[in-house]
View 1: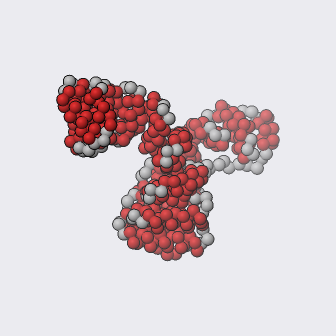
View 2: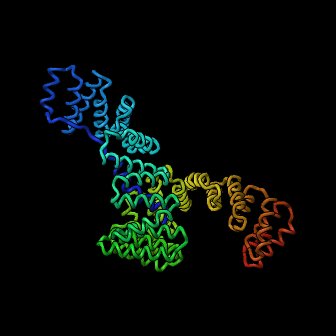
View 3: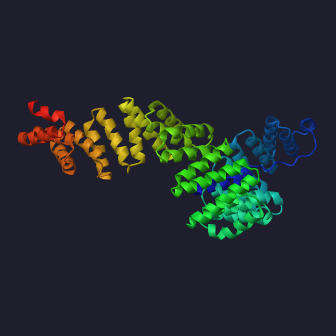
Length: 509
């Protein structure tokens, strides 16, 4: 169970209610009647606005837009015309145009609730949550006397949704609390407030209220949220009991999706406790109960990967990737599984899909995908392409010894031995115990004729592991290149005695 799960839960209701525009109030006159009227009185801005309203309600957006623009041309201070134009632009998908129109409403008429509210919804649609939250606050400040009870409720919930997006969970919880003052019996609001408090690290404050609601309803979500609080407090047994209640409540309510979600949460906790077999069973049950649950199959695949059953993990991960419409978790895990199994083409294709579907903020996922692509290209012999991918991985993960090592391998295969040595040196610095990094560093030093450096590396390797025949052999060449023939023969002899045949023939070369 993670805070990310809580955030998704909070958003489910909050954002949905925040994307409902307040529309215009229209008279009963028809578009045809109003069109005839404006032909008789073309200088009447109010009449043009009424025509725009009627056309908008009839889904004749072109006529509505023309009418509103005509009204604005006649009287720029006609707020209803700007407002109607904003509705038309929003309905047409021109959100920037809608934002301009609603902003003009709020600039010209700062006390209009509907202008601030619709501006907030438009900003939310444009994914500008900070500005949207400010606009919702402005709407609430201008709520009296225009806004209805439902208008104010939606504004509080819309504000909460935007605050969740910017991870201001305490403020979001306060906004949900304000909404509950208007609608105290709304179970969804009670849940969302609790979820926001949990995400803010204030789960204990919400525990009594959550437990009270849980006892009065059959809503499994409260049991899951209570389990989250107990996990945060280190009360694992209480958390397990709460999740088992969630499974039971969802089952009794004939809610397969809820039951599967509860089982996934239970499995995640079991896996975190090292109970891999129990976790896998929970995920399997979840997949059986809700065949559309990508989370169940994804987590089952992850459990199998953790248990070293990579081949068995393929089927659930492939199904999860097929089912997951939003997000890249399943595809990324699938790419890793293909890579582990040596299914290079499939791994590269899956990782490329991750890059195409990921957002700019998902830098870690992109680095993982590029690492898989780089390995795939390397194995396919495209060393230049691999080097490009690893360079980006190194940039994203400068502290990864593995990324540095593979970047060095790609450079080495392009005969850029000095460049390879730089990556290998960094890999050794990051992981001094990596014999693989030191071996490759020695090879790069030899290839770039840095024989003294190569001698130091191989000398350390044979000191650490006297049975390392190949390092004895390479140490011999580093010494020979420095005209230390006798020492070179000793090193080759050691390699020969350890069964490394090239060490036996090196002196004759």
